[in-house]
Amino acid sequence: MDTTTTATMILTAGRTWPWARSTSPTSDGLIQADPDNAEAYTANAKRYINEIDATDAEIRELLTEIPASTSVITGHDSFGRFAGAYGLEFLSLQGLSTEADPSAANMARLIDVIRSQNIQALFHENMISPALIEQLAEETGLPIAGTLYADALASEGEASTWLGMMRHNARTLHDALAEPGHGEGGDAHDHEH
Ligand SMILES: [Zn+2]
Image: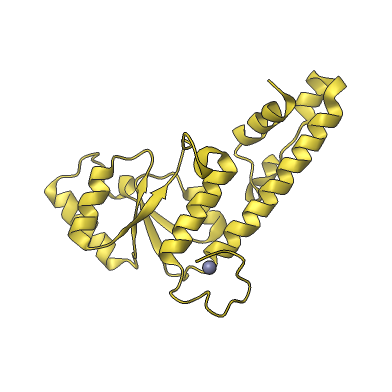
């Protein structure tokens, strides 16, 4: 395994992120184990930290365009830290319903909750059966605005790396939930709408 892969695996294993900098990426362990390659480990760690910071800035820009009162419904409680860092509220179906396959009564309750919140769209999740979301979409008339990735990376494409997955989720949320017309002035928009 080459040094880049090793460093990336160790850094991502700790779910390293600017808002979790108490667990700042470190190559100390690698350097101790293999001092001959200290320079490469340090350079890789530095490069990865820069990439994290750039991704964080991009996500922040995308998500600040979503109105503050917006809630997002997801299948399970995987987005807590993401939500906390970027100021979105995530409600999970898992938290709202204890049943994997909700009864009619539970389904009615879920729909009530969705209607009582400022919910604009539903999202598939890679780890959740699409049937429940599709049923909710049918019952509420809300669009399904893409797939969010949590816990497991996509096998290919943008969401197949940890940072790519974070970026994909932010773009998917932005495209579905950003205020209509917010980018028309052209100010501070280096992403496409
Ligand atoms: Zn935008």
